[in-house]
Amino acid sequence: MSAATGGLRLPLPVVLAGARGHGGAHLENIRRLQRAGLVRLVGVCELKPLVGEELVGFGAVEQSDDLAALLDATGAAVAVICTPIPTHADLALAAARRGVHVLLEKPPAPSYAQFRQIADAAAAAGTAVQIGFQSLGSHALPAIRRLITEGAIGEVTGVGGAGLWVRDEAYFRRAPWAGRRRLDGLDVVDGVLTNPLAHAVAGALALAGSTAAEDVTDVECELFRAHAIESDDTSCVRISTADGGRVTVAATLCAPTSQEPYVVVHGTEGRVTCWYRHDRVQVRRGADDTEGSQTLYGRTDLLENLVQHLMGRAELLVPPAATGAFMRVVEAVRLAPGPAALPADAWHRAPGQSAERRVVPGIEGLVALAADTQCLYSELGASWARPSRPGDLHDEVNPS
Image (cartoon, rainbow, N blue to C red; front, side, top):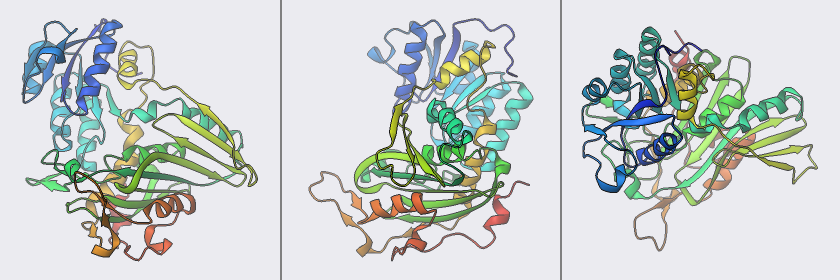
């Protein structure tokens, strides 16, 4: 435990940057932890101040659209940053310069260089950074790793991830940065695997035991888009790891219906599947075990874990080092050619919808098969698929 904990006393003063949209979940969590006596909300950084019921139960809270000034004015010990992706690095660096610890929403940055800036600045300042992959706080993950170590499914042959979600045109118009690879000269990289279904990538890497940047030796990307956007909405990646393993994750925002995303560990004598949003795990031993056994697990809240870490009571669950491999995938997606637009005959508009939504027929089978076989869309015979991996990507994603 290396965080600078000297002089900290409960409840820890917290500033929340980005309190609407997804940030509303952080606001409610801070409210819960304030009732438990662990934190105290002292500031909110928003373009439009919170009012009325939004602040019920918090008492006096300073508000500003300038996070640095707000941190200075409130003397906050912790900043929760849930703002647009391109702003993450600047805000996290502002916190580090002031000795403020951070819970930083995923993805932590749109480029590996910015990610390293954040991690290095925090290390130099002696502050803690928790990356907001809440699924990595699941108790299911260490349980699955124990099963693997005990040989419950034999020798691991690969790890897959699958995500089938539904998003309409309004989703990509909800903010200027949504559905963008770059905006106003800044990287965004808001792709299906780097933002909405990033947990599938991070979870698969965690179960493969390959979370550090140096654990990734190669990333193959196939990036596509059915919607009229700049970023990808239907993609897959295959990650080669330093120990000779393979991690393949496929996902889309153009499914006929939403299904629970999952990660799966394949073994010579069975498989373990984790539906990570609900911490549900199924273990199937042998080819004849079609039902398997299922277990529900709990999870540790990441802000609560950060508080306990700062008080010297717990190890940090998701420090930057635990997301280096994920950021290598983000970097590969960033460097890859722009997503290929699917031909008009590869998608159709969902009928009877109030907002336009595009569906890729057959994508459910392709996504599941990619997670099962470690094959990319192009290798599975999708007529619209072609690799978008530049020839020198291997060198680009190797740590320098």
